[in-house]
Image (tube, rainbow, N blue to C red):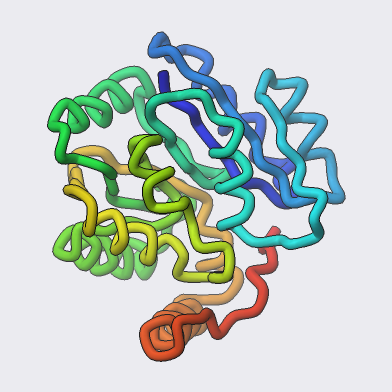
Length: 231
């Protein structure tokens, strides 16, 4: 069984489509929406669409905590973390191929390429993501938009670091490689909305990524104190 965990925060416009892509999936699965106390209709839509909903009442709004909260109630042998706008083409074929990597007992996590929806992607988006995906492939790492891991490995690592507001995804892959193999499959792309890229622009986004990465490397903490939603 695979548990699909989706952290959300003000996602009323996208969450239904993201959940419904799993309706045709014949692989045993559950969809868990881990909500950061959204002020909109996200929770109601998620429940009406058939997802199990966990609401973070602590007041701590971070992707790491929401992923960990969702994983805490997950029942599957595998846990798939995706963002709330992520779409996978041909979901049955996609996850069948993704899970096949785990037939090797050494594999603990899977990372994949990420692309902005073709209908809204700009030329700059395609160039920047080509570079980003190449770097992730070389490093055998991924982003928080898609992380497929064994539940046993996730628990062994203690999940995501909740003290990191950003770069928690890179930290998770780095730690995963200390206990097993991380695979990057170039044939399994995911697509997402690219809202932050388009609202901020690539120069600002790259600056924040680099700044936070350096901060985590040098000081073991994120420079960003919040990761406010862009809607």
